[in-house]
Image (cartoon, rainbow, N blue to C red):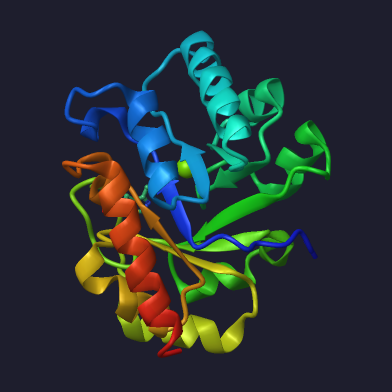
Length: 215
Ligand code: TZP
Ligand code: MG
């Protein structure tokens, strides 16, 4: 079982297309200034070389700000840039295979789409679970299920792993998601597309505090 601590509360999952034409790295730095404490680089259409270049630059920024950088899906990129973690979904490289390629020092987040995913081989090796999606979202159109608050609360009862909720997480529902058992909120559009990513992150942090007070 992975024992790497997970003290993070606000997880920025990046999508440059949702940054409204603003500089991608500026958006991430503003978000960190506002309270994002972990960042995931999620790229679906870049070439391997461009993905690595972007990851290297982002790693420098994250290192300067003492925030871990997690790479979505790509074992190769995570290895190349010495990322602090890898995030994998149910359809991606398995945890054991990723570990063989990366080494066991790189912790891995795993998306759970339904309760049964918990029983799949090696799911207990994950560093944290992505509760995916908590709500359906236009940012990711290929999801088939939704956990909702009740599903999240049920999951909370059966695992002590850190739970990271993702999918239409907004300041309006943030406190409720935390009070139903999430440890951390993962946000794409709510920060990337906000008029001020820094102010948006600050607002999320306040809601997270409120939610923790009602857990
Ligand atoms: N995985 C499940 S939902 C999602 C991902 C990457 C996208 C969440 O985006 P948003 O804009 O925060 O709803
Ligand atoms: Mg994936």
